[in-house]
Image 1 (cartoon, one colour):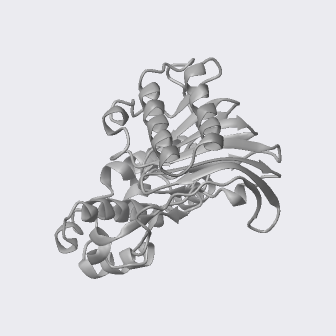
Image 2 (tube, rainbow, N blue to C red):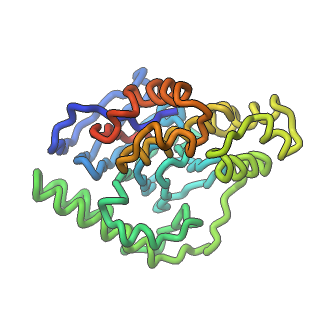
Length: 304
């Protein structure tokens, strides 16, 4: 599972746009990139993948918000044990720190717009108004949202550099505002629950991971064996229950450290029993010590 990592030597202005075909991974997937943009708060691209495979889009998590707008493809959106079959002009929202990804259901062409943005910086006020229960919007009849993505392509062909940056930032903010006022065709938009036990396990972990939570305690709560729990997590999230709990704790710690808290003051509140264990796990996950987190810039990339 990919966890967004930090790097110390990122350029202050990392902006680039291009239009070309690229060969990804092992050569099994050919990707046409129509447009691509990146700065410290927004990453955007519009790509079309031929012969896609789920191996190229693993479940992952990061510390900012992600939006995918599907143009075509036979895919399913996965969010922490929930799955949504996606159709043309569907928009799916992945929130910070949630384990998520795209499952490829066939080798049909997969084309989508993908936007990652720091919701604490871009459209913060509007983002806070989005219902926490809203994951997918069916935009087949929502021309406002469809036109915003079309504008990204149009502006890409006519502007560059700082001008394009201003336009992208404005469009992302406008998109978030539109999401806050959009009522899906199916208001409750229920996902396909991959497994009720899996959902209960995740809910229990989310409520208790900052305590000294153990796998045994989860099994006792759900009346299942450790082997059964392990199988559920590997099937639906491709990660063990212990690693999932650990990731939740480390992401919480990372967030607190970025707010200026000291590692020695927060490790207990994040569910770790001793500082040594916390320190080793932190370095293993993020590649640097907790003490430098506040000074580090963040490396982010698109994985969906």
